[in-house]
Amino acid sequence: MSEEREMLRATVAALVEKHAGPEAVRAAIESDKGYDENLWQLLCEQVGAAALVVPEELGGAGGELGDAAVVLEELAKNLVPTPLLGTTLAELALLAVGEEEPLEGLAEGTSIGTVVFDAGYVINGDVADVVIAAQDGQLTRWTDNTVTPATAMDPTRRLAAVAPGSTAALGADPGLADTAAILMAVEQVAAASRCLDLTVAYSKDRVQFGRPIGSFQALKHRMSDLYVKVSAARSIVNDAIADPTPTNASLARYMATEAFNAVAGEAIQMHGGIAITWESDIQFYFKRAHGSAQLLGSSREHLRRLEAEVLL
Image: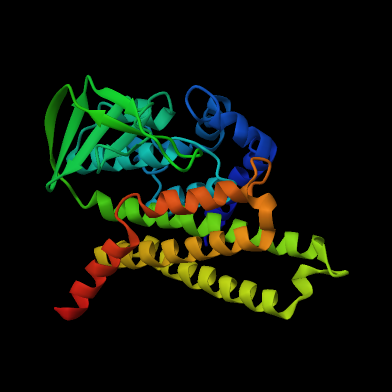
């Protein structure tokens, strides 16, 4: 990773540590917009988080997909609710069709964006004022929308059903679903890694039969297997960021989903009954794992896509 990206990662990590601890995340979940508006402002002003993929001549930072991925990764470790994923995808959609007018507000963070892949479950759908639909190979701007909050397992990522009042064709879809899959995979691997770290730490503190449960050989093997799953998924996701092809996107999404589901499931088992209480952070990782697995194409759908390519 370049020195610039390491600095970006460190800056975001410092903001998360200072402003997005467990209690702050819970407060953000219960707020009107579902995210901490003050933290979002800091991310936009101090990090330029919402401007990373926008060219400098259009008011952005002139970065690449990998820069946005670094920020999303750091936020996902603590499951910090922000509108960054949807806003980044909306910016990429607008850039693909040369629609510059909404980009300034999005890059500043004063506007919130989203891309609709499934109108029933739209990320940021309840707060977005720049809504782009990617359907049937075309991009369309939706305005005067009717928004209905959707019931979601994961409280750290609000979803909404969105129905357009007016639509305007923008141009051909450059394959935003694949980009979305890669960025979702980035979040999944980051959250899985943090969930595993929390579980390992708990296993060192939790004493049973006079010994920390982490000293039991069976649990050591299980946690080692999880570490291998997460490491393998991270390697594949990094490859997809560097070379964002449709095949790499599906492979990254499949591996990240499988790794996060495995880690979250084992974390619940190893923590025991406390894991499903509101006071425990592990229940949020479990909900994020299963919620993310159903967004932007299920693991099974991506696997079928990969199988079809092998059979060609």
